[in-house]
Image 1: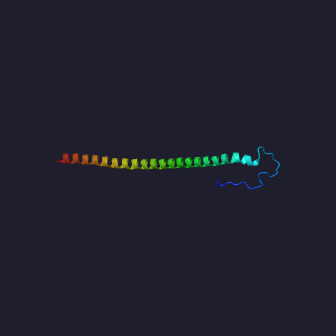
Image 2 (image 1 turned 30 degrees about the vertical axis):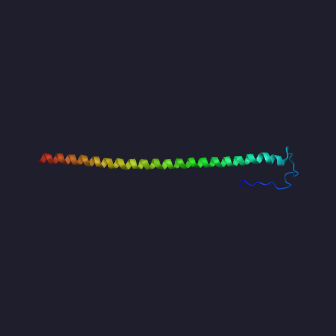
Image 3 (image 1 turned 180 degrees about the horizontal axis):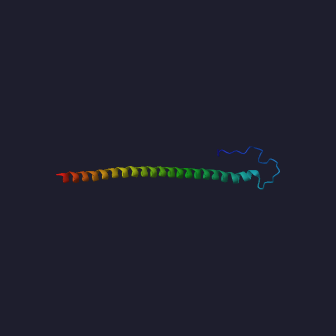
Length: 98
């Protein structure tokens, strides 16, 4: 969850082993918008990457379907061609007998 962000009272000036200049509150004012922008940017990149992955998968499926259709149509064409050749041979054989 990005927003709303609240800084608990009293923790901005809490004593620690670190010396912060400018103060922790001022750092939060500068860094927090950058962090939020980066998180939104990362979400956009993830969305773009997933869209591209979905497109790749769809294109792979379409290619596979097209290959299957080509195979089926080639088989059908060869069967019809063979049937036409057989019919011509039968016609020639029948004509030769007369």
